[in-house]
Image 1 (cartoon, helix red, strand yellow):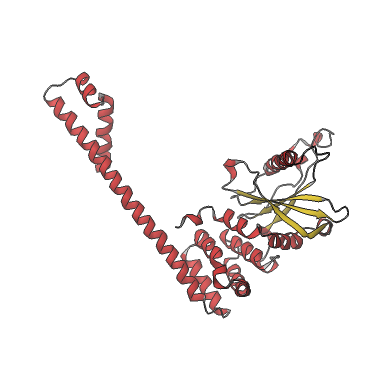
Image 2 (cartoon, rainbow, N blue to C red):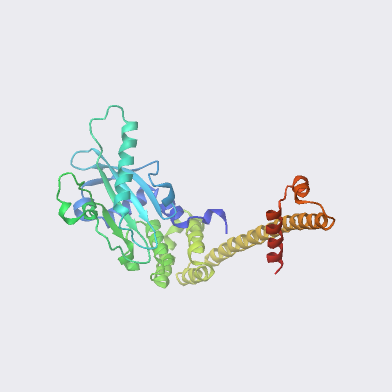
Length: 324
């Protein structure tokens, strides 16, 4: 499989929602009215950087935006954290607070002599096999008796739980909706309906880039669902009159063949390398056995070959196991 299919969730999320227009469409459609109406969405811009823990990049992605607050015209940070773990994590709230602190630290570094912190609205975008089951309130991580204490941080996040949506309820721009549908299918929810709607909405992409616009979606579908899903997608494209549907599946099959060929080459190279190593080991074992037969001591053998008795027996055992 091509290298670009590595970490498919992260790649698709970043490719689509790094576009401020797609992000604005998603958030406007998904956030509650009390929050959505507070921002001037025409001012939304992407801020470079990521604030995640290194060991969690396989299961999380993040994007940071700036948007103006309608009442004051002042910029607010809007932090979108994409969670795609196998199950909801109750400690995500703790990590999210850490990420917000990192954003504030970056602000303080970038702005000389700041007089106040810029507000952050944290939004968790969750895709997974099961619905989100934890509170959005940070204080709920503490014992109940302590939650009202003044020194316990008061912090909450917005939640976009995609697992609760039907395919027809997906909102946002065209690319954002296709992204959400394919992620829905990747986690085995409404697969047939998701692919069918994806094909229907894909028709509108022809006006803004043609068939090539579907490339990243095909890569994601290949990485998460495989060949059968690609063929099902082709059938849906044809049903909706996209005559280039055959080109889509041909492109996907070429990528699959490329990945399979690469795997064969790598496997053959690995086999040759392992064969060379095994040959060297076998030669070492035969040489030591020959020296032992003529009465050479281990002191001399170790000085001549670098192998002591324990290592010799270990190598011999490896050869026996590989030949069995």
